[in-house]
Length: 397
Image 1 (cartoon, rainbow, N blue to C red):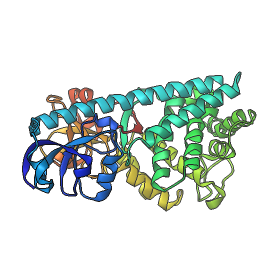
Image 2 (cartoon, rainbow, N blue to C red; image 1 turned 180 degrees about the vertical axis):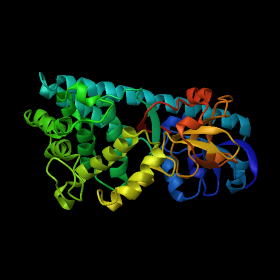
Image 3 (cartoon, rainbow, N blue to C red; image 1 turned 45 degrees about the horizontal axis):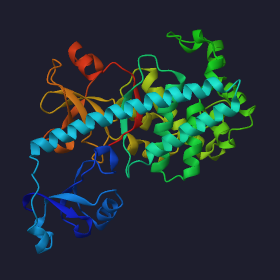
Image 4 (cartoon, rainbow, N blue to C red; image 1 turned 135 degrees about the horizontal axis):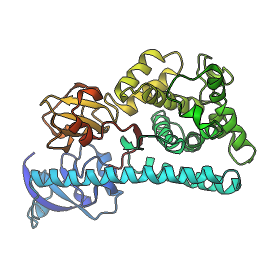
């Protein structure tokens, strides 16, 4: 296809084989980039659902009717200008994802606070938050996962939002329906609320817990179930998630040592997402190492199809993973993409200089391998925000 200057093309003249640019903000359409190669009629149909009357043609003018080929040509953006525009939109998208995560965590905390004195208000607040999460999940045709920052000491409500996002992504990948997704979101938000009944001295203890302390901590699913059940407002599936999110299909979980199909599929999804984050947090593993550990050592504890869905959602290099590039730079994975080996990254050189966002799909660069936090210089740690625990939210790309 020959490169041309940009021409305004009505949607009725779109053809497979064209490369077009949408006259929209990056966050207002379901494609990964504003520049789209039309590879199938379904791409044309999707563009026609957007609130636009035309697109800019970048390549494929020979596919247009003769009368359109002779139309006035609009000024063309250079490849460098397009790249700058895409990076600016990416920065905006990452900020929006962080803001949405923060708002969701605050709204979740507000719902928790109302539960005792105003259970109906707590349920309404939680239901509103669930609908917002559903909207954000469905905002793009193919959602991806982004890394967000919850701070050094992750709260119960922040953890709940991150687990809800990860569990919803797994459930959607498995083809679960709208009702199941809503129950999973609600259950995930509240799954650890029972920890509010566990003394801080136990919850925040850095050294090994005693048997008595472990037993007390392991009562948090029952505590949480009791807190929600007495309101008579929360759906049975949500209550089941709260009570059984530490159950594993081999019967080694708690509190009831359920096995296989005794555990509801919605609960299994939340259990898997929670187990992954537990591995991630408990021993300071990187997301990539935690995923590998789960894939190798947890195969008897979770349904194999769900583990495969988790791997698909997280990709080869999950968000938050620290990597070295083939040019010697270091980077933090920010967003998964359809090319699992080519995520969106924030990179810098080994001294922490020349920081920038990169779409590896558009770069002549590869990920050489995963690196550990201690392999980074102090400056690179600061630039990449590498020491912050990893949480997840939907990408707004």
